[in-house]
Length: 321
Image (cartoon, rainbow, N blue to C red; front, top):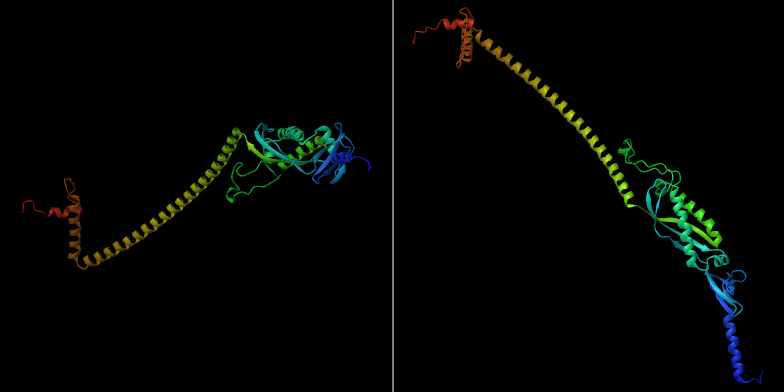
């Protein structure tokens, strides 16, 4: 070796470093590695982080993500079992649990995302088509709504939830179970699938708004009818109390007036019964008052000559001035 020229030694050293550079590789804690030879995987996936070696120039290193990955589906319009169109936006979480199978079937994450779109989108559409709108919207089964105390006895379905058999959480589980089984063949472990947002179609929105308006109108009509009924009761009590007050007042007035008339009659009787002349004077005064009321204006009065009221007229001398 000592007799070799320096350029050859330098070249050998450079070649050795180059071979070492092409044979050594590192594995990060967040990834797993597949070694391929002429495009085909060789051996098992390498999951341990650190420095590793491979055959230079012949074998290549393919890194595959080991962390949890996200899938964000596109919002799609789909019909429910009761032919109601809604826009469903879903998301999920997944990871690669079999790197070799994943590499053989999909190669990279881009292909995996495309396959997730197909499988999860299809299963979501199938699940939505098998259930009614209320099942997709409601989250829990047998939930009891909080109702206003005044609406407990309200007629109709105001404030009453329609019964459901599963609910949104169960539908999400159905999508997860069906999709997870299909993704296993691709070396993918599906961790979770959820509805991110469910929007109503424009026509469905109008139906929902109309129903909300109808319920509010029912509540308003109930309040109005109860208010009108209470107002009628108050008015009835007022009129009853008013009639009672008026009758009692009229009775009191008649009692006072009767007592006053009796007292006046007593006073008149005591005054005009003191002598025979006073009695005759009282009869004369009353007769004159009667004449004044009877003979006023253009009235005509026909009396018999033997009537009591005519007795004073007999005494009148028509020739006297």
